[in-house]
Image (cartoon, rainbow, N blue to C red; front, side):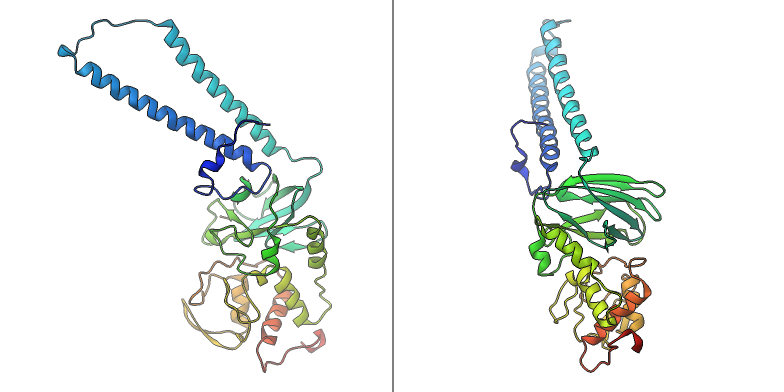
Length: 348
Ligand code: CUA
């Protein structure tokens, strides 16, 4: 591993997100090393060029008094010194690349499926989530595949990026160092992008069609011990409970809660409280928030975007079964006073 002074903090936060993985420091170090080396030589060479031009142009007749053909010492110096730098950069780059590409044996494995236009993260116990939940201080390996076209998974805070290719698996690993599950527990605005508050940003960075820019997720890093609790809770979603209860579980564990409040509070997405049956303005005109509108919003969120919202919701196409979508609708209905809701599966 590289053990030289770390000058990444010089520009930290200007171009890069705060580093939150074990590998990030090496990536930043090499990046800034090459950057500052290039800046140094840019100014050195520019200054020498200007100085030589000024000096020789100023001489009467512009003629050289003496033109040296050869200077062994100089030529050796400008060959050997940059040669060392190139070899050093190659060495750090290559060993860093090997580290990035070689997951530790004990890495926790999570399956990732990319499709137009959302992410599914699948855990060993069968839980599927649209956001990536990982334990802190433990290597995590993502085994990724695509259902349709080329996508690419990028987590800026971890400095990792890898293409997700149809017809084959690609892998990526990292070890997250900074838990951020406290804000997740408060369930606020976790899909606001452009900042790593309330979950680290996860982007698709391969243009994949109309919904590419909305192909987003958040990375929630759980403190040691609490990841297992989250995973167990998420697995508890019980299809045998009442439709409203199932809808509530889906809201809580499948990512809805991070944008949609159920108490009227404004979030990234519209609150679900008292929304069922209301008339709402969208970019395609007035809509009534009924079964069809909610279903469309879940499967194709870009179809009609409510006024005052940015339309950053990912599609849940293929992630929620019909009965689950119906349960979400029942739950939204239950949050509106006066709406009749089914108390058991027999009633629907
Ligand atoms: Cu998926 Cu861009």
